[in-house]
Length: 362
Ligand SMILES: Cc1ncc(COP(=O)(O)O)c(C=O)c1O
Image (spheres, rainbow, N blue to C red):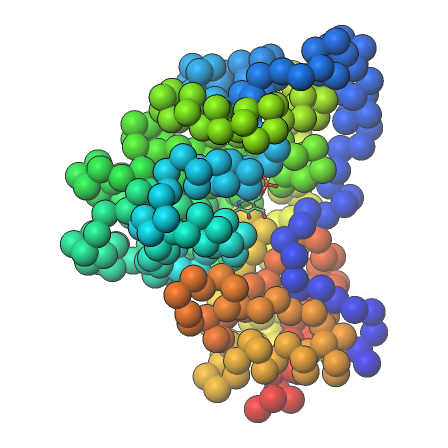
């Protein structure tokens, strides 16, 4: 064996990133100040002071904000709102596997549009639009999960033009967007065209996933309809969590927290990239400037499924299946590497073991 088990499987935040002291103080204050509201049922749009804070942050009106228990539950609600069985939805290929699961649950016809390192293959999108127009296109333009791709400005602009021309919604999922370690941010799709884009963000990767606080901003009519679906599902999201997160945000802790995350995660990304150059120079990989993931295309002849048992049994390395990210097949040589919850030493060791497992299979 090669020492302690290393997990390249789940995209979870590092536990040492959690703002324990600030959140305990926020929790105490929230219950003291808003106890009668946040221990009670409330509106499905969420705790009003948080909704107003988010509206201000995003530059929208409060009736354009819907909070929820994590952004994943929003994707489920959008499924109920937009999809009748058999309706077409576009996704990037590869895409976030849980979204595929939810879309399948709604019996959507999922059409995948290939993703390059600088964003969507626009030619493939134009060809797909000649065939059919989707109800919506679910996409993750910044530091994509699982590929680690980020869209160029040109691709963003063309995408919002096409959404306008053909009349479909863009469901922009942006949990990693604030975590840029270097380089310049491009405008979000929502900033480019707020009339066609529903923009989701989450505090899961900024504060922690435990509070389950995510939100979407966009068209007020869609927000109202989706808020009704949320109400019929759980009456209201966790107002206790929202009260605590609101206190945390309103005390002004978020900018320093984001800087702390960048300082923690940037060296982890760098360690992973350096280890790939050193140990696996012939594997193609994305080279993101932020987020939680990069992805590797394994050398010709090596599949992720064949590699996983060898990596686990001989090298104490857990790898995730690649194919779960591909809704219409493919992804045999795709490997996602989540790097944030491992130290630079573990990342170097993990990529070395990965290279050894690849060599063992060759
Ligand atoms: C692209 C994407 N969307 C949504 C989620 C779920 O986030 P939340 O914790 O806000 O439900 C994740 C979590 O990994 C994700 O990567």
